[in-house]
Image 1 (cartoon, rainbow, N blue to C red):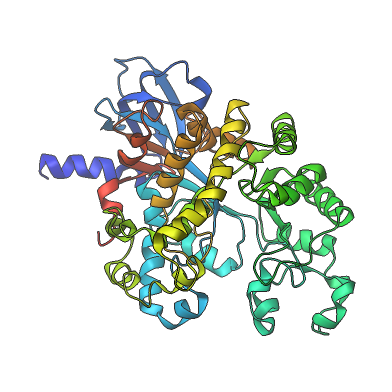
Image 2 (image 1 turned 90 degrees about the vertical axis):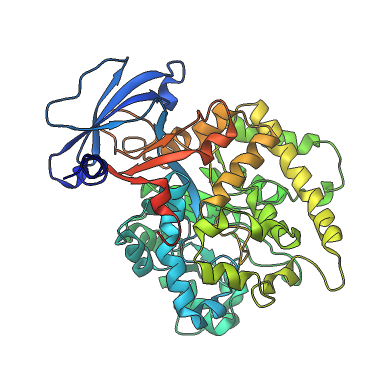
Length: 488
């Protein structure tokens, strides 16, 4: 065997052998529990786990271990995105996805690799509507570790089931709370005693979920008075979720919604706060907002700003977005070409009204973005418990492509006021702790899964480090970044 082939096999093949050890050496260790010690070192992997971490240069490789020279680059824990929706296809409605099966199949084959391309080795799907689909992704040759919240617990005919036609609503959102006030709108085959909060939480737990997703959303546009949980129902859900050892996650981007969730004792807020209601016209952060944010900080509630929700919509009025070079590495060629057609741009009508110019639509999104930045900056100044989550894709927008969406979210958060250290912790140890995964992931420590990222630059020195990924390990199995691009 040629020397180059042997070295390639040591990098790619060695971890496949049972009991085989891999020694990653000549790296600078960047781990959130020791940010005061960014120094050269080595990591020993055996099968799926880290078994030794050595700080200091010159340590000899264990006998028989495959050696990987990190070339002095930076080794970090694998990144965690705690807010994804794997089943949705960016830029496609469910109806389009059902019709364009070959294109969708090609997208799903690439999708987990696109997350890995940017170093995301752990994902949390907050609304796993299809257990079969989640298992299908987990069976793919290359994929991040995947956890989920099971089927979301929704109010009957409330958000987000309200977007689905009534004849399909109860097939797609099977885990709902029966609302007696809507008896005439709920098909008679569903019995109230089968759709209580207790039964809903039990369904989520039975699926092996680690969290429970709820919503407080009255809606927008023509649907602006949707049913929401009462404080008593929410309190019952919270108690049941915690008894089942499930993390309670609540969707809500308005002052009303986040006040409700904070007062109700949520564990994680799944969005930023860009809808201030009657205070929307305020140019400075109002005292009422600050009081709420102070509670979030004091109670250490996990906070996912999800800035790419709005930026993802703005992509439709950004003429350069679909020419972003990274998209060619993350999407199958046929899909990227289709998104550039009038048919592929169908969702633009939801962003820009008829006759509205792109510039006017961009300006229309600036006010909520400004409010969101102000909230993020205030929370950052208080060192809130930020959790990195992208809501990929947040809607049928092509502005939320897996992998790239995370990198853009990081840039947005940094520009809004998060320090590089806060951002790094949000994407590693904060997420791990919030979702009770800290014994498995989130730092480079013995006993944890060997989910690692080798970057050319330090993520504590430059945001561009997150686009300098060289190699990704998931459970001890490495993949060179270039091998993860579409078409490879």
